[in-house]
Image (cartoon, rainbow, N blue to C red; front, top):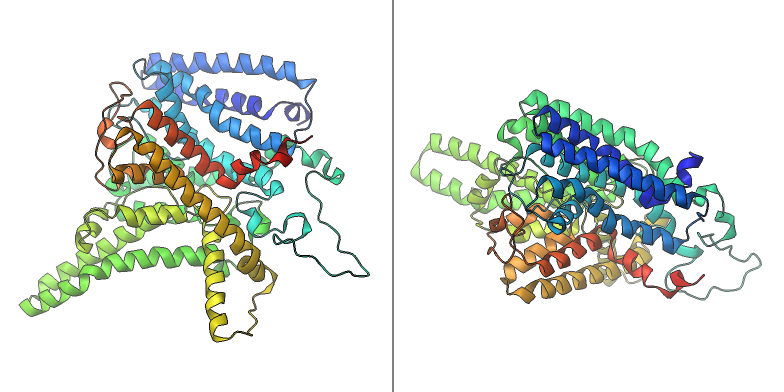
Length: 542
C-alpha cells in the first residue's frame, strides 16, 4: 500500500491500463488475430516500462497534492489516459490514425459509447477492448466520485453538504455565547493525514467498490449466456450495462437473442445507475432512511412510467374505439398484445436513456409505430439530460438536482396558498429546498449554456441544426447511442478508416467538430462546476 501511495495517479492508472491490455491480447491470440494480439502485448510492455521508469523517478520527490492538483490529475486522466489506451487500437487499425483512436478511447472511458466505427466491420478483440475501457471508466467514476469529488464537495455532493459549515447565502449570524464551529475542509491542517491522500482514498474506495461492481458484471454475463447470447456479446452487454457505456459488438436491440427475459434482466441491472445507495461510499447522499423513500428512485420511477404510459395511451384509446366499432374481438386481442409489447419497449428505452446507457428494446420500433411518433429523439434527449443518480456511472444533470428544483417549486406553490406555512421533512429536506435548489439551478443554467455553446461550435461546419443539437446533447450527457435516436444528416468531411461508419453521425465529422465533442464528453463527465473550480483563483494560490 505504501509503495502504491507514492506513485502519481496517472502513473498508477497507466500501469493498470497496461495490465488490462493483456486481456484482449489473450483473446486475440485465441481467435487467431495474431497481429492484434502482438499489438496489445507490445503496447502493454512498453507502457509498463515507461510508467515504471516515471514512477521510480517521481517516488522520492512526491508531495501530497492539493485540492487543485487533485482535480487537475482527474482532468489529466480523461485527456492523457485515452491516448495511452489508443496505442494498440491505432496499431491494430493502421488506416484509422492516432487521433481517431484517441477519440474512440475517450468516448469509451467517459462511458459515452459514441463510436466512429461500424460494429460489423471492427474486429472482435477491438470490440472487447472498447467495452473493457468503458467498464473501467465506469469503475473509475464510481471510485473517484467518493475519493476525489466528495471531499471537495462537488459533483453533486454540494447539494446535501454545507460547505465550510455555512450556507451559500453568506448570511450574517447573530452573536452567541457558543460561537458556531466551522466545519474543517481539505485546506485545514486537521486533514493533513494519510486519509487526505487521494491515492490512498482511491485505493481504499476501489477495494470496497470492486467486489460489488465486478460481481454484478459477472452475474449479468452468466445470465445472458444462459439466455442464449454469445460469450463476447454477453460480456460486452454486461460491461456496457453496469458502466452505462452502451458499447456492443453487434448491431441490434438487446433482446435479439435473449428475448423478453434477457431485456428484463438488463432492465433490472440498469437500476443500479439511479442512485448511489446501491454502492459503497457516498453516505452523505442518503437523504432518507428507507430505500422506498429515496428521492432519486421515486423521481426515476415517475419519469420512466410517465414516458411509457404517454407513448402507450397516445394510440391505444384510438385503436380500441376503431376495433370496437368494427366488432372484431380477435383483432382487439391482437391489438392488446401489440400494445403491451409497445408499452414494454417504451418502458425499457425510457430507463435506458435516463441512465444514459442507450440500449434499445426489440419492441422499441413497435412502441414508436404504436404511438405514432416517427422521431422520438427529443423525448429520449430530455431523459438523458436529466440523467441518473449522483456519484453513479450515469451522466446528465442528475436526478437529485432535478428533485431539489422540483421540491423547491412545489414548496413555492404551497406558499402561494399558505404564505405563513412551514414545510416539514427534516434537515435534509430543508437543505434540498433552499441551498440545494439554489446550487442545482446554477448547475442547470451552466449545463444549458454548455449545450448552447457546444451547438454553436459544432454548427460552424454547416451541420443541420437537428444533427448538431442531438450530437451536442449526446456528448454532454455521455449518451452516445442517442445519436441514433433520430435520422441524422450525415457528414463526409472526415473518415476513420475502412471500418468507420460516416453515415451514423460521428465518423464523418471534421477534426475540429470531433475535438469540440471530445471536450463536451469530458465536460459532461467531470461536470461544469468541477472545471470551473479549476479556474478559481483560490485553487491557484499556494
